[in-house]
Length: 206
Image (cartoon, rainbow, N blue to C red; front, side):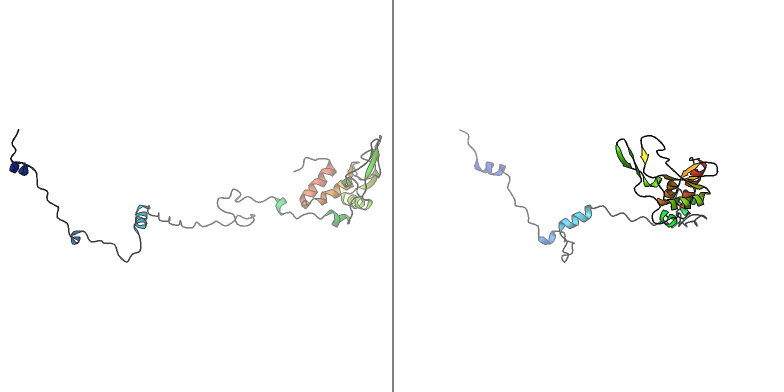
């Protein structure tokens, strides 16, 4: 049995000393304004958000050149149509209406025919009234000829003739179709071209 001296066992164990408590005055003073109502989350958010980029400085306004002669309104420098003179059709006035030229009823009503399958109707544009045909003949320099130009023979029969205009060269023009050129809101220039195509037979106009 070993004999242990109590004084030696006590000396071998280190003595625990409690740490000295720091006084409140030793801590760093808080520099935040106590009157501020901003909490910690707001401060953290403000610090983590990237600074807003400054708006780019406005470039000096470039002088816009004056619109070229013949253009309508103002022309921007980048416009692909700058300096292009509009076509004459865009400035040409509209042609008069068919009613203003030929009266309230330029075409006959009830135009049709009969055939093996019964009766049928025609497009009224092919059937001008005699008064309309007389006006068209005066415009074109021809004379009125009434004839069945759609069904001149065969089992199909028209119930009324077409009012045709015979030109000096013998060409036959349907007066109702000429009157119809004025019934679509075309410009006068367009109507003139369409009438010229009927008179000359050259339908390849532009």
